[in-house]
Amino acid sequence: MTEQEALIERLMVQHQEFRHLKEEHQQYEQELAALQRSPFLSADQQWRISELKKLKLMAKDRMEAILREARGLQKSAQATA
Image (spheres, rainbow, N blue to C red):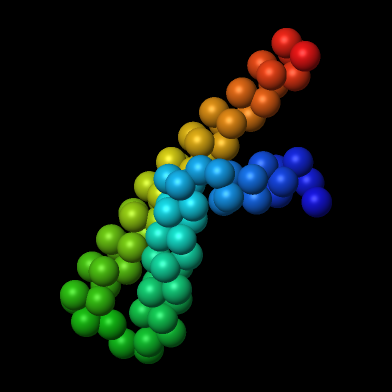
């Protein structure tokens, strides 16, 4: 397991916002995949795909910010130890 994977696993247990964002991201991905399997999309479905991509990106950006913050806390804790 990489350091990144270990950190994500720890955050999934200890950080409620991270866990919520990860679950949302997965839900958006599943809905997006279901819509993209359709051979023909209505205007509403095309709009929803665009919206899902934005929501997914926002969730991922926030998760990355939490990961950066957690890495920074890890490094400062190691430096003081």
